[in-house]
Length: 234
Ligand SMILES: [Zn+2]
Image 1 (cartoon, rainbow, N blue to C red):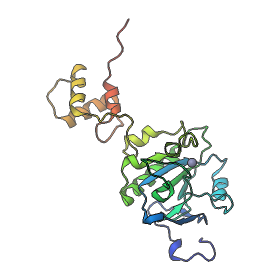
Image 2 (image 1 turned 45 degrees about the vertical axis):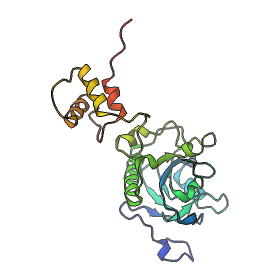
Image 3 (image 1 turned 90 degrees about the vertical axis):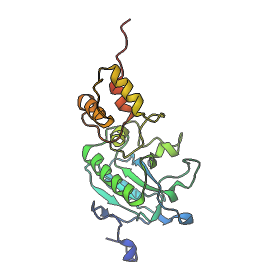
Image 4 (image 1 turned 180 degrees about the horizontal axis):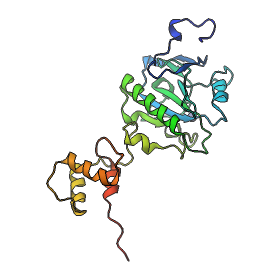
């Protein structure tokens, strides 16, 4: 239910497909300079339960909030409209730009940082990310951790977070600095025995079938790892 005095129109959350539970926080304002979300910042709550986190994110005292909170059972809450500026990022910068709150959507994951993120939670996150990325035209490299934009100050979502899982679905930028090249991939594949004359797409599918059967999407640095030669015996 919207808080008393909240105009009905602004109380309607803009995400309906995933049916988030609307749990409005008073901690928000307008995005500055007419900015629109270009980033999605992932956090963990570092609290013992989702209800404790909800309480804090809606408490006017600490002045913190996020657009979404995902419980460890996959329940999704929305606290701030995507059009509005939630208070999750704080001081920091990314690509030389500050005021990350005006440029981002904040997603909190119910986790204390010392245990793996559950399957239902990751699943809900993936659904949410693909919807947000489509709605706001955010590319995979716009999905960042709080630690990425606040190095030294923040460590969430932490080493337990499975970035690779997101990368494999193009829900985050792949690790690695060099753009994977089809030609280099073919050369490596030939060394490993894949000399049959097929096009790039079939070659990639064939190698994945054997080494990374779950993988989808374009050529990824991990496809190169699958072809790496074992170290020479000494
Ligand atoms: Zn955070």
